[in-house]
Image 1 (tube, rainbow, N blue to C red):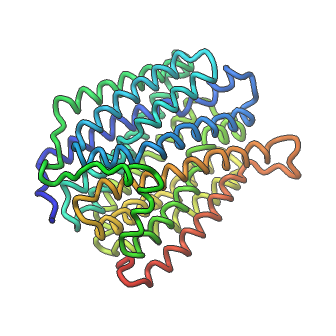
Image 2 (tube, rainbow, N blue to C red):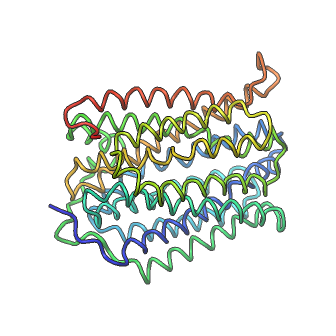
Length: 411
């Protein structure tokens, strides 16, 4: 069954939803290291290890509940699942804003993990309203929303944190999540007609069952999924250690951390929102993935050996085209799956990405903490980025094998 015609407004609706949600997420990143330091009294390199476990709490919960929400959206539609997720995110941010102890920070992250289906459902929404040949470009547009969110969110968070205190950005993020939910309630249309919905199956609505569903598809889908998993595992060096690393190595303030993440958002918006629509149709999804991975590898190496703060911005520029990899691999998988199982596929992808964020942050932050601590055989603050570079090479080699399989990645 083919996808329905793209509504004139539907794509802009979901774009704004993802944008506002990402702004809320990005706001808290520059001040989280300082908040952990305030609550524990530990130095920032030791606080990074706790930050990794906070990310672990979110990810392992999302890993368990992501497939449930994906399948619920296949049964009841995308809109109600998305709205419930946004309301839970608002509760999470408010809890983190008032948390007097580290325990409440973990409680908030668990709540957010339960509801962490907003991106999964958004991608299923895009698959609903996009013809197969346009999915890579429209998935890239969601990357543009993510990029704009990371331009505004960390910049706002850094400035608000310096002006009004460490906790203020969490309340701003909670307010934006509520605003996002209100926007969706009044504006966002449903994308999955009743006749295209399917019954909820608990055997599919669990992380193991959802991942096992990948076996029903062509072998290339599973291979692409594994390559995507390794790629995202490497990227946990950015998400897990960026703020801690730059504060420790270059003594950056929250505003400077926010500015650097805003620069990441600018490159993501340019590449995924603009160049994706030009590059992918011209060179094909397979070559776009290879270009994206090569760019990401170069960026990780720059971050690992940066001797001065400005070099981190140079690394951001070098890594700009890494934004081509995810939408291209996602599109290659979605093109080989039936329209009424797109939510299930995106749920499986979300489970893989959640698995990466379960393993990645503790791994990367422990590497950073160990190689900056007194027991390290030598000081290597960029150890996490070197691990990310090695994982990127592994993902690249696996993807190269996929290109030679029947039904695999197309040039």
